[in-house]
Image 1: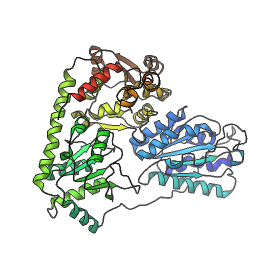
Image 2: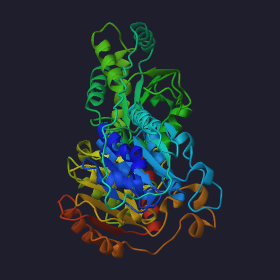
Image 3: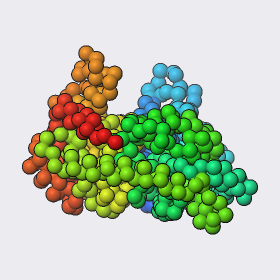
Image 4: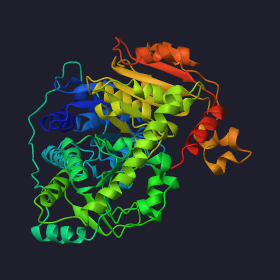
Length: 568
């Protein structure tokens, strides 16, 4: 084992750089890495057999802790199974340290077991890829691995954060002899120092002078973690200068901002369009919001970001403002508050804002009146009732397809006290359950996952482990298929809808819950749902799975009627 000491040192380097969580998938080629990670006293190592699930669990942990988590797998297709989570982490800017064991280069494509081309396997979906040598006997091997690991972890932590990949060829023997001791040697910690981006006074004056031409100013928030500094500045800009602030549920904009836009945007004309658009954050759920701004383009569009990638979601970008959102909005508010500058005609600004607030108040009343009083059993109403019962201080995770879309219509008051997460980097259904499991492992808060049946069954290997946290509650909305395709005009009108798009299925989660030792309740009507709603806010000694059964055809009929009956 002595010749693999540089590999053993990887664990100590991780700890030295504050990476103290590792998700390991069992294998033989990665045995030296597994032993190093599992035996290190300061690493919390967990074993997850399914690499796809393991990577999403790690991503959920890293997202909540806001620091890297390591994942480790054997060679071959195991590394490819990391790919969906790696891509999601890349676009959500979540740091992962991806350690893949590999065969030595000369054995690739030689009909030997578990060998594929692993170097640069994740392509552009990692911030950087690293390859180390296969021989560790020379003193330079330690120097090389120390250098690579330091650079990789520094890169993962440098804004924008993201995944990095280290591919590690390993020769046999993999296992220490009975009398050998695994010794963790002290490595070098090469720190990377960076300065905070700021705007020059000249740039600020140029932007503010441009802003004086516009009375209709809108801010659109993309997906982001809750940021009290940003929310405070946005509140000030809204209250004192008539800004209109629009945020999807996953933007975590906490306050009395515009949030019901999905319900009415399709009915609006250009009188609601902004003259100046300011955007920040990552993706936006609302297709209607993107379509509206693309149709009625602003005269100017500033996108606030700290990355260099040009992102033009609304096809109207005029200025990239390279600064952190909290710094930008705080400086903008303070500059305007000094009255040295103004944004257009303030009277017109507040008239514009009142247009939007009138819509927001009307839509909020409509949503509450319809969904609190209906006696029609349907999926959308159950989402409303479930979200209404999510307690303050908890996390709400939303699976893709209908879960995240339904929830985006339901910005209920209690959500301002809840942190909302969703895998909207790639918007896939493939790791929603695993991500929530990882998040629950990383926090003492209650974690709730709202998920549809297709996404749940696709990722139920997330429950195939021995450490399901008791603070996890899964609310499964089972409509026996992919109900979203009944909403989309294209597939809903095709004869292939049921067998090929909707993926109809008759499974329930009861046996999965039993096998996973989870508390289980189900509902097929409002009376049974009440049992679930009563239980949701309560803490439990084990993970919980609540299953709500509805009919897809009836769900779509209700939802379409709900949207059609609201008239601006």
